[in-house]
Length: 156
Image (cartoon, rainbow, N blue to C red):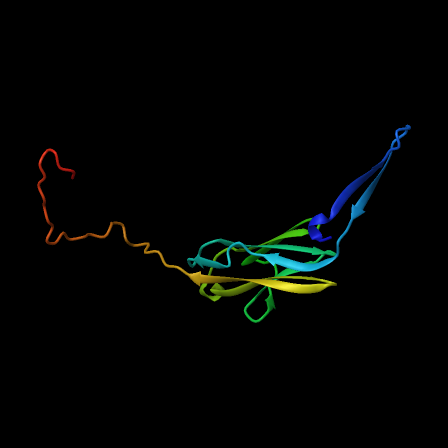
């Protein structure tokens, strides 16, 4: 039995003589937290709004939070917004950075802990730069272009 078997089961007993008897059983599997991150490396521009996402599974219910750098816990505020959506033993964690600054480039961690253990997942944000001042395409110069003329039955 593993965490994927967790859920409700219906046991039905019958011997051909009415009534049929049924009983609902809830199977609960205890397991330490597990984390899944779809994008572990994210490029961002300064000033961009960016959302980091992390998925956790655990039972008993886990405590979940975000950290950065050397383990500084991130709290909701003007710069950062954390959202945690729980569904049974699954948790979807989101951290929104309202305006990315140079101090945000680096490592963020989503952390999940319960009585059976703890784990974390790492997301690294790196700077990307788009040239906001360029309005034209780069110009390429043709040099030494060969021109070949083909007859009507030859493939171009």
